[in-house]
Length: 265
Figure (cartoon, rainbow, N blue to C red):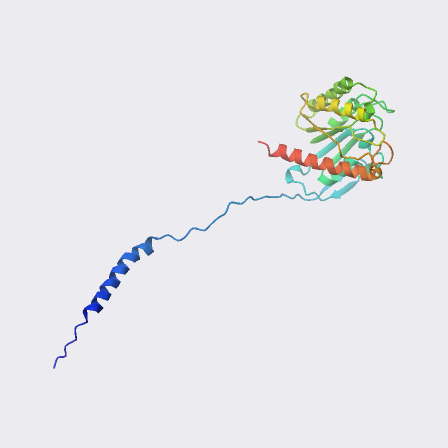
């Protein structure tokens, strides 16, 4: 005898139909909804390029190893410093630890100094050689960067005379070193220097530097405190600590300027 399957109640059929409708409506939405994109916040990325250690060659031929944290664009450069007793390292423990050599060590550059005590742009000192007389030697050293330092030794000259002599120095350097970066470091404050003499020297050199030879003037105001006896070996010359202070300040200026020039299009 054939058994009959009982008819499902209408409510069950309605539930089944409703389920199909829900699936039919929601399934396309699930399929078409894209996965959420990953969220990326804007960030400034600072890249510090650290160069390898490089020797800073002293004028006596010895080499002092220095680890430089300066950007790679400032590595392996040649620096020449022209100036007076400060450039010669007077007052430091030795000429090899004057500010010029210390600057080279901090930057990892090769350094040659052309310093003679008592000299200036107009003052030949006891050696009879003003700055201009040493310009060719600077050019022959084939530097990438030149710093001309000073000088309060030009106290007997007028501002116009100092400016004219400095302009000639810068012009000759630029002609002989068309691709070098030239800097003029103004006269430094010392315990026995006359403020007016320092001001005249700085003003004259600043004017000459900005006159057209593409020279960057570096104003050292505040680098050395004349009232701090630890920075001076006497009334005019820097001590070893003073030379270190100058080197620290100058290294920062050169790093910033040279890096900016390298980055410029």
